[in-house]
Image (cartoon, rainbow, N blue to C red; front, side):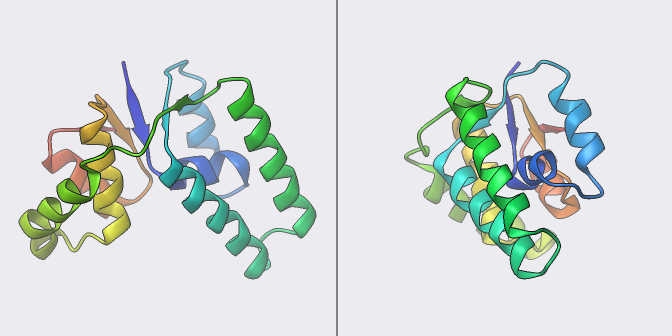
Length: 141
């Protein structure tokens, strides 16, 4: 089975938040998870935001960066290039479902990547994003 998780899943793994326990349980299921440059860029910004909003120390952020690097080097994630058609699919999703679901660009972009990578499941802690994923035929958490 192939799983695409949105960035909130990765943030919950490398920081402590209300979804950390759920994220660890999902990870412990042994399923391999896609990881794209979109994840890495957005995740890095999210960790920096944790420091900016004083929810994490600079030291904690540095530990998260180191752990992510180590996990990527040991092949924990299924590394994938950013799908070529993801922006086109993202725009289609916005046009078709945005007015009804109120999805944001990154929500649609992650779902578009999951669809282009042929993921069978989509993991997210964002209700709006889960609705979009379900609407497109992806099974969520």
